[in-house]
Length: 143
View 1 (tube, rainbow, N blue to C red):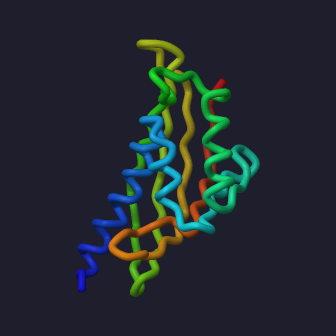
View 2: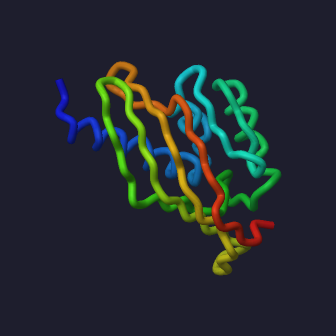
View 3: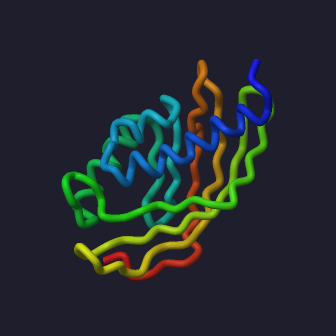
């Protein structure tokens, strides 16, 4: 049985993989971080998407909305100040997020600052998002 610290570390890795997979254009791996009926709730900005089929449809719209380079969005998700609480095979997490985006090789544009609120479940040896909500607290020009 893993210790609480080991479980929190595994959850931290799930949260980090979310960013790396999305920013790297590894959308199948991004979707696989959610349970079969997992929810990504982006509110009015990004919509609510439930289940892996809906999550795949959501990421299929990414190239049309963001500049791409080699199949990956030209943006970076930066997550910090994570607070993780584990209760058996369920957990909650909250964290801050800052997203920066590029319009070209060297031009960074305004980004987003906000918060994630997560419910995660352990399936096998992996922690997956059952429900991830993002709150966009500060929005720059993402066009």
